[in-house]
Length: 321
Image 1: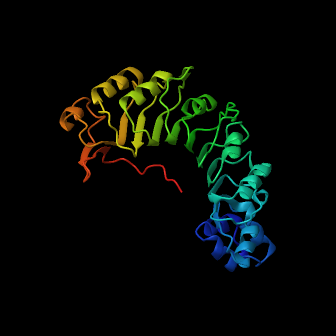
Image 2: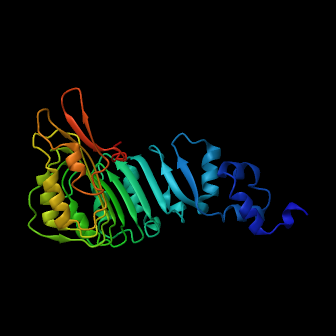
């Protein structure tokens, strides 16, 4: 049997095991039929650099209709409109011109499902993100947001997972804007625990993670958070702070908050610090407060006298570039 007599399905099965580089070098240009099969592949990924050589650029253009995921690793100049099947886009560190180009590339907005961007200033992109401009976007990760005071906060039903680094507490605004949100991770540089004037109810959120540089997490801050928001179906709550607290962390009061405000909570993870000399409860007593929420809790006394209270299966914190 000659190679050309094989059905397209056989070629597609074989090509699934080969990289784009191997496919481009070995099969591209053999004949029109093979070229058509190559360009009908789906769910391929590429990484773009400004240092890509001409043959790599030619390969990306040839397979443009097959690309579903793109990682742009530097100031690489790329026309996003030439990738009609792009569902995932990551900028390692986007320049202002790259952000502007993405916002103008409306051809790719409707089908985009995943967006991950780090940049010096993402305020403009943030406004678009929560204005329901991306009708299919399920997950977004935006790092380094400056001021959000003018964000329109329109209803954005497609978003199910949001990770944001911000200089302010925007939890209520995100919950309002994303009624179908299931996962929310925030890195907040200056957390404000002031009582909100409005009450936010959210029925879909399952997982909430909050990191902050200052001030340190306290039970009072957690109380203020869940006094202003009702999230009855939350199953996972994680807190992380860098600054040691001068205020004791009262786990009895924390358990009372969980009982009253989070009836479905199944997992509590933390990584917090208490200043030297701040009293705390015995670890065994804390673990006995609940049958499973605190069983992974650990104490670590550091060389400067600071007490670190953490869960030993605490996953990596939100990465900042």
